[in-house]
Image 1 (cartoon, helix red, strand yellow):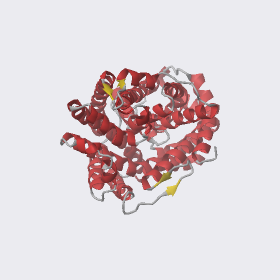
Image 2 (cartoon, helix red, strand yellow; image 1 turned 180 degrees about the vertical axis):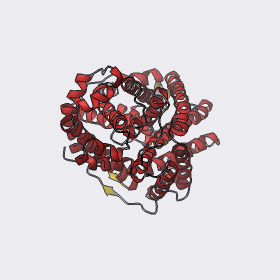
Image 3 (tube, rainbow, N blue to C red; image 1 turned 90 degrees about the vertical axis):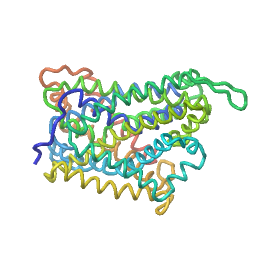
Image 4 (tube, rainbow, N blue to C red; image 1 turned 120 degrees about the horizontal axis):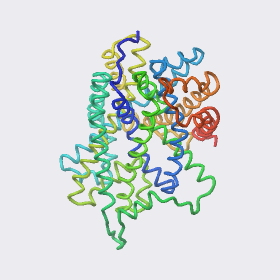
Length: 462
């Protein structure tokens, strides 16, 4: 049933595809917002430490499970330990919930790109522009459909002709765009109505220099938990994605080297995303402008681009083009996790599986789009926020299922099948496992404790 699943042709294709999955909307809108909220450099310091320890352990585990079993997330856990196959269902449920709302947001990005390309960037500055667009009935569905079609096309083409081929093009272009916009952000300066002049370099200081003044123990705990929650987005763990991608990696590929490269690539892009956004928003809107949350990208940034004058139109076009690349590579990986599961369980062809998942994604994403008008409701969530369809799906997948899947994966590998299962896969062919001792301690003890705390915080217990 699993023959002709396909493989990445080599290390570069795998690393770029995995990095493409990791570098998504979470890095570009969530990371800068959390960094600004978490006292700038304090959040970044916590994030980097967690990425090199906690993130490293989860990323290594999932990629190694994928390659060892050559199975999708739905079936891989059952191969390792038949009694734990239910964990595969949970892991596959995450991308299944994420795909519809990710495509809806991808549609928003495409709409904004079109707005700036067509010269209507001034319209996007208006306070009611974003709300007016997402509460409209047909436009969000149209743009979502275009985004979903592009995503499905790449997955339909397969592993090396689709995912690998397009990642090799999109990821280097995305990196160049991010670096270019980040450098430009540091050069700008602006004097506001009160005569206060702020510069990009001052914004850089706000972003990077840790400010521990006035931080309480509780606040520091929240920053650590925010950084850990961000890691799920940043390295695409607990979504089944890295297991799916790992299953396409050939046995002669040096897994340790690839994992290190994915870690570095993702952390650099996450930091650059903040470097691109935080100084620019600080220059034009001060520290208050950085507390916009997800609205940072669709509400604050168009105002920043408008403040840049003619250059802002060009920067706006490049920015939203770059976000489209990031969103597509991530959406492709989310869809691939579901498609690979159908191929393995049902024995269906890639083409049939992709068409079925696309149909599901379309129906689900239409419901998400209608959640802002016809199906609008307000539901208080345990984490203290109020949400509608998109927020509810986001809460279930990110706040509940992802920490739960990661926690159970740690228990399975740390205590049931033992860390040696992963270590043996990583060291195939005599490959050296750097940070082996750290890995064992993280997967058995530290990561499960951190994840249990995160899970309790997410459901409102802490």
